[in-house]
Length: 445
Ligand code: ADP
Ligand code: MG
Image 1: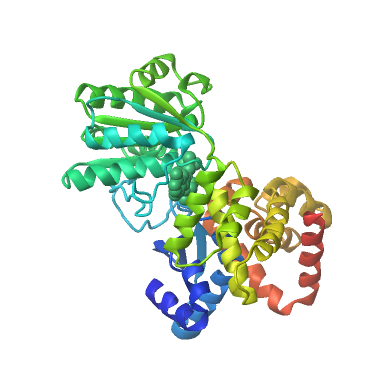
Image 2: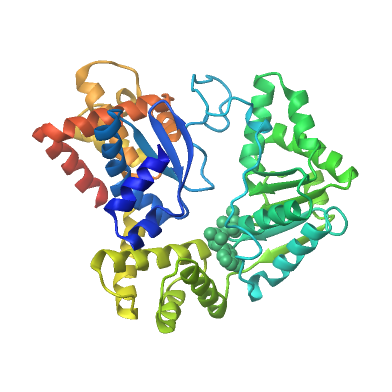
């Protein structure tokens, strides 16, 4: 299916557009009539949502006759087809693609996150060096290795790079990468399915355990307890543990003292925002990898616009490339300035929350919020409810389970259904078009 979509787009789009929007995308799950794809940046996600998802769905429908929905997600976002995280009751009847319990699945490291593609600069030099040491001599020197620093500075990249390097040295090594949320989720699932033994065996038999974003352990007592034992088992076995967080262990609220003290046994290194030179080098690498010729002064200009987050920096480059391909103009500094002006506007208009949507929709249709989130099946309530879900899907980045949750704990399929229903209805119902248009206008203000 994915191959088919790629082939079709290859014919339809220019090479640069194709390279920009399709090359770095991969399918991650297909279930029911929903295809989930993974895209590298928030810009890709927006673009897919606004343009390509619908185009691809139309292609499939006209050729195969099957209606499908395509959802783009970022690598760090949960797969919307999987159970919502922290679900403790109400298991939903979804057919996961891989039927093994989540904790038994192999780690898929991102191929792009290697030491080769990592640009070294002042802010990350020490983190990079420590990562390399640990990859070469796991368990020997810095255990655990703890990265901390702001969002988009390369913590996840380095963790994957360690995993790749270790597998290159020892192809039979068992490497496991999880976010702290995935760990918590796995743990809870193992209790629900009475497979705690297997869970423990799985986590305690690895050679390298990478746990990303452990600040999300805050508040999860049971999970911390379990992680404490996992940590001890691995540590005693001299297996390497690598952790990351957006702050130091002792600054993470509600993290058990004994975990904080263990996390300090090894080495903690921070990653600070890249200086201008490093940012230019990162952009240059990226442009080269995309075979896109960008003048130096333009690279400097872009690097000067975004200074604290490498993900956004990459997003800015993609935006400039896309802008150039859409306008058929070569990439210059003035073109970059135009392209990035829009980026800033977009960033602001994105911050619409589900509760604001619910509020506006309820007022607009003169119904109560509790009816909007409730279960009543009368038409005067069902329509506003579906409109609100549709808008939540269109105007926010929230995942399907998250939207379902915000609407009184509904299943993600209900959200998909509502979205499809309203989309179809909008094609031939001018009154609804006007209403939805009005609502969008109000929300964007
Ligand atoms: P974090 O986990 O710290 O939030 P990531 O590791 O996800 O950040 O990095 C965000 C993006 O920036 C990724 O696409 C990553 O490849 C890229 N990146 C970060 N640091 C570097 C670097 N030093 N060289 C090249 N790319 C980098
Ligand atoms: Mg990360």
